[in-house]
Length: 297
Image (cartoon, rainbow, N blue to C red):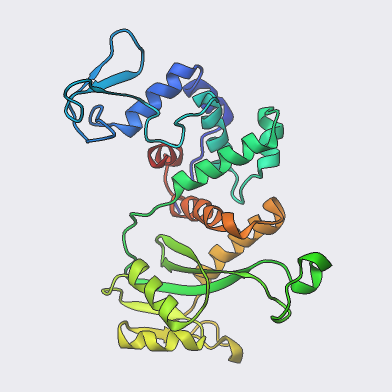
């Protein structure tokens, strides 16, 4: 088993003692092959002699020149917080297996406002979302889960008419490649059309096997993929190579974070929380997970 490496607090202090050290780290990870213009992608960007960490591009603005900084086009743009504070928040989020709440970030960082911590955490989650992932191959497990409390436990003014005992809940569907990455998305319904759209997005048509449970909407996957299911209703959870234990393990980590760390999650922000758990899972064996997060942001 590969050892999961996380940067410790002393290592963080040695690597980022000043604001300039954070800026240099961001520039090196954002432009490993040299500074490129964030607007046109040109590599012919000239540094501004009178201003630190500023560059000028004349390819996209021949007359006046387009001036940009290391923050342009990143989640840190237009922020009034030092980059070192952002790095500390990212470090806290990555070293917490089940996440860290904005309230705890506010207490730890000494922010005077909860809104500041809430805003920064959501900006980081948005940056961690991987929209250009590689489609899953090999043996792929797929399952859906429901996030939210029981209807009977809600306050009277927040209960909605109709629905069963567990309604209303948010639906998250996910697929994981055995010993590989996971892709998870928030969906509105569990009909075949929605599931088929997710499969086309997340799973390669060259996948050798798709494993699911006995949910009827998965039955039509046999038309496009080699599909097998384990009948959980009959207490058959593992049939040879057919099981969904890996994706259920991911759900377990995510739900423990939802219940134990965040306590409640608004439906509007649920995709951001899912992206955070997805990033941590997909980089569980990455020795430079912090650098990967900075590149993503």
